[in-house]
Length: 300
Length: 215
Image 1 (cartoon, rainbow over the protein chains, first blue to last red):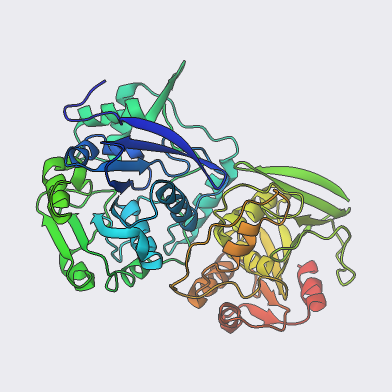
Image 2 (cartoon, rainbow over the protein chains, first blue to last red):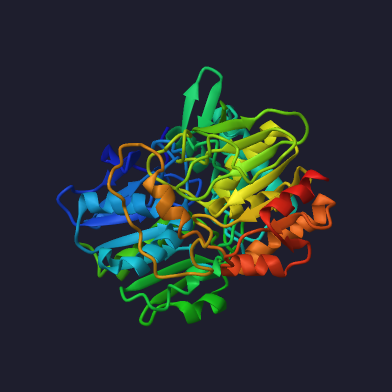
């Protein structure tokens, strides 16, 4: 299946990162300067199939990967925020030891804010696509993202954990999986969601199933407060671009421009896209890719 | 001692039975970097069966690759054991005391008292955001304890109000007047917050066990 503007990666390979198999996808000239894309929770690297080629066409070697348990990467016994960041370090280090531009969407954006604070030497530029923290609990991450919980949430999460040893994803037709994803991605075109099924799910005799590890699910709980990520932002020293949409939707974080502006690093930019939802780079790939390329100083 | 293996995602958890008997089981949760004892500790006088759980990455349980530990995932380990044993009383050492607290709040109706004792991993990590770096550990030989467990679970965030929330859940849903007993000497900030809550008794571990055995 094809989707207008979407391109399969030019190169795909696997890395053994700390014992976990991480699937890597690349677009663009292998000899060009690397640019990293980091996907959000429950997504996978190939959700960048339309966005990444635009950056590659501007002269970048665009590299993304499926986080552990997502897409074509291996399933792990354990998932966590720090583990995701360590995996990112493993991938980035494989390609370069020099500062590179990094673009993160949603949870991927929040992960990269934390890494940029801890290891700024890895970043020449940081772009955050609707992954700026707000006080609203993050809705698109699994058990590592910890919000306050009520007893029923806690029991529900533990009930889920009890079932993880035998859990499988529910099979369905290609259209059924696309329709299921539309519930959390209501603003994205059905043709795009069908395309995602063909690259983010696998087909067996009884139908298609998303590749995402069934042990992962929305929700979870813990002591982490989303606004703590915000405390890491003002001091970031690399050029910073944040892009948020104004339309709230299930996977979004409810970030309000006036709340987040004071936290943008000095010299950084915040672009607010009116009438656009959480997946800014999928709803408006040309506009957002143009912003990123302009922010990086134009094509290579 | 006999051992049963319980599945939690990809991990096989070793649940050891240290003492036979009938009635409500006692579940022992070890400290960080420890493993379950092979015999019932001398100080424990319990009328029913006594079991001890090896957490993920510890003892005879699976040592996974790549880390990813959190106290909440280890809580789910303990909850898998609780599902197997049914209603029980819990004793935790150090990090296991923190897990015992969480289990007492999360599964209040099934935990008939939790005893929190001193032990490795009692302090845990900070109570808020830090500038901590992300350390990639050298490959291990796969033996327990998992270095990632030691690393990640020793810097686990433990805000005082988060710990206190589990006391309130235990109070609200256990039906017990005092569902938690703090038997240790050391009081890290999260435990200071716990002992300030209604429903927490400070006493010796022996007295705590006698109190919960009588329920």
